[in-house]
Length: 321
Image (cartoon, rainbow, N blue to C red):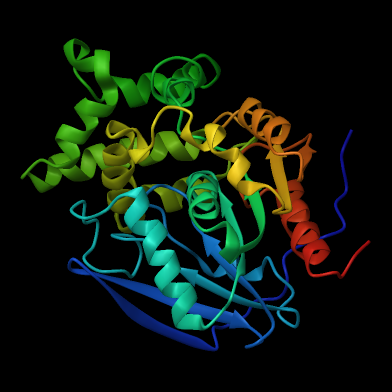
């Protein structure tokens, strides 16, 4: 059965403002604002850690109803310095979000994030519930040991078997007991060729598990060094440091979300972040709605996920019933 979705992204749009914000410790963040200045505030948190934003991300809100800030997190995209690991962690990015909110002059805003962006959105909302009007999350990742093991030890490897062989095969057999550490060692190697080769393999593995059906254009983007290098370096660093979270911290502190509405858009066949985390979060956070997309995986670019995102932001702006 083919499902037809009514909602697609809003038309292409250019920022009405761009800039760099110095957040200290040598980091400067690129940001842009789209939509209507003074309308309903929202902020977009890209995935990774180490991903970046794209023009597509601007189009998930009605530009007449929203004033949206998008930014490249530390070390990502156009932010400086490129692929930097020093002074780059979850809680520093949470504080960067507060600086950006204050820069915009918003009292509170909608926080929208997918995958690692969902992790970061939850960390921010639990730190600043009074500054969070609502949450829109996709592909929930809570940073727990079982979720990390699924992606880089055993789980996803059983579904994407041949791609796993390519990913793990980049590392000598004697080092495969800790693939993340082995990749991190190569991603921080003084040899550029070693860094680039490891970054490409890491990024391609992540791209492989992102979609329900193969997406050649997406895989090409993941192979691009401009995306692969910061993505792989920063992602491996955060994985090794448990995302700077205590085990199950985001579930244990879910009471801090009391009263904050939320919509979770989750692909049923998400190989990267399986639905169990979204379901556990929903059970612990009754204010949230969980929308399962039955013919989607993890990627924000799949039709059913796009439909869910646009319906969610429309609903939270009072546009739909």
